Image (tube, rainbow, N blue to C red; front, side, top):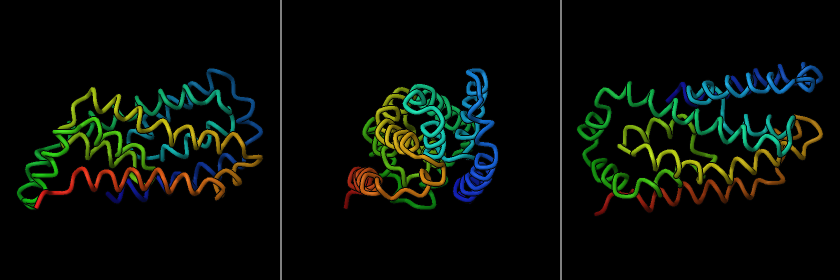
Amino acid sequence: MIWMTIIPWLSTLTITYVVLAEEDWIRTFTLSSWLYFFIISIFSMGLAITPTTFISLLGGYFLGVKAVLPVVISYQLASLVGFFLAQRMDNNARHWIQKRFPKSASIFDNVEKQPWLTTFLARISPALPFGLMNVVLAISGVRLAPFIFGGLIGMLPRTLLFIWIGSQASFLIEALETKDHLVWLIVLSGIGIFGLYKLLKPKP
């Protein structure tokens, strides 16, 4: 949990410093340079090192709407990295959680009954960390198809929003500090968190 909250924050600060110092050089990137960037981002997002929203902002800032396809593909591949890694490291995590918190059994049951909607709601909210959701969905028994396609549909609104925010900024700091679209972030976060609460809360 600490890794998935502190490390992305530190990486954002570090990358922002580098980008601000080397912005002119980054703007000379060729197609192959951006290909390397997105390949690296697949693993950095999948390992919960960089936040997905930050990658969207960077893509939108430097590439505009052309960033949509590579960012979406990178997101999907990064989610698979996190999903399979979580499965390999599972070590009966679900059994341990259920034993320690008996009421969690009904939550896991609800996830298994509605994996598509669960994944969609987990992905649409920018407030729910991407890396943490990879782990939670994997140990909850969500199958690969709903994980991929439910996640894709859920990630699209926030992805497009942050790419657009980045594309409209004159300076990177402006994109990072903008509050013009705060209402949309609150709406998306509210939909995801409240929806998951209603969907997964244990039945009395």
